[in-house]
Length: 373
Image 1 (spheres, rainbow, N blue to C red):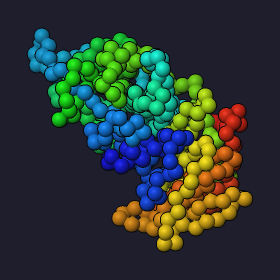
Image 2: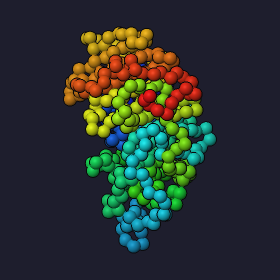
Image 3: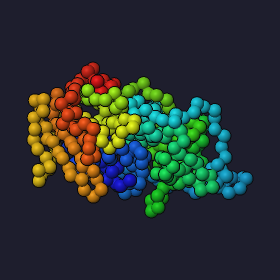
Image 4: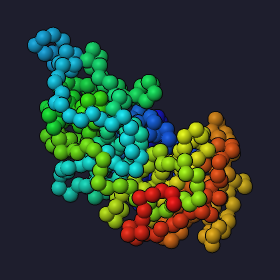
């Protein structure tokens, strides 16, 4: 994935505090779909400085070289380790309920944002405005450990999306085998490890990485050991619902922001069995007014729909991208809303969807766990 895609996905998870949606020539729906299928943030990680919390990707720090075990070369120490008997990892994760949750974080740090998809979840922890940690959880069968190559390969549909180069055994995380991750080429040497992967259940792997170099390796291990796996008690909440849509529609991926004590959905992508998901919408939500980008050359028009001033965009197909249709509403009952659909023949246009949209306001007591209704 490109650094631009990584930047876009983090902006979507920070919509409650960020600028208006990015120029629509970049498809938000497509970016989210690619993001969760390509396993968020990976290849951009070494390209962005870690001080940029909203757009930074987690840098990996230098770990020591692989050490040979008593029975032979280094890869034998990677391949051999008894795994405690635990429940199997799920084959598919929920798009509406985080599968993992932090149990302990350093003082002043807390969960702030995250995202859910069928093969992977992620959680972001912050200290105030400063990005500190990212926890990534993979469903069963997504990752494969290769002792001979000293790598952990995580793939979707058989195509490798990210390869973790392992730097040797780490102390067990909650009794499960764990490994330090090597830094990328050209990374400065450091005595601190900044990334660890462990097998939280048979066939299921997790990764925890530090966004800065200030934390100790012991903090990394302590946070990882306190992570709980299993359906979270907190469901993603929706401040806006799409009404009168086909019953087959369901959320395939989502991003959320911790807002007013709840996990507020900030970006969702819909899909349906047997349909082209590119023709189904993505919806982004944020609390408060957010201005809409107006494209020149007739691509954008001002309209009033259901009494709300909106900007309607039609971005022509170009450079291999399909035609994109969008509706941006800067203020609907205290919410900023953005609906986007890719594809030359959308099942339902964003204008029609906006006419049937229910804005539930900014009070969490009125939010719903159902994205449609």
